[in-house]
Image 1 (cartoon, rainbow, N blue to C red):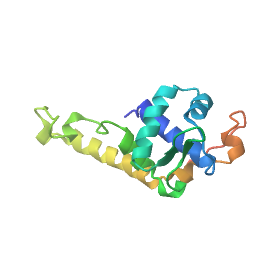
Image 2: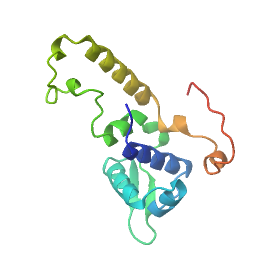
Image 3: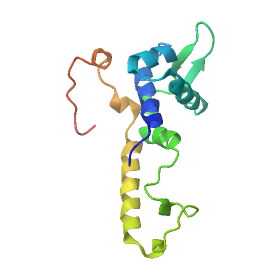
Length: 150
């Protein structure tokens, strides 16, 4: 399974905002920091706002802040929101399943179990679990030592 850029950008927006501690930021600031398209971020921010993950304010003094505390945002919820089709195989969805062996296939069961375990791991991970010291987040030249178990 490969997550879309849309999901990647959604998570990046939330991480940036979480490190900003309620400082209002602009889409342009996010686009420049990550070196990604402002137009893509407009769509991402719109959807995150509609679903309560962020709050947006329009106008000259406008900007974006988190709509929830980092410990209230599950990575799994963000992934489900931003992925158009999370299923590994079409046979997981009865409307798309056209496989002749679907009812007797054991592969389907093991892959569905793997997908569920993947999503459970993401559900168990909160945005707050992904935060690192602010100085290291905003300065990519400082090495970060990753821990295998969050």
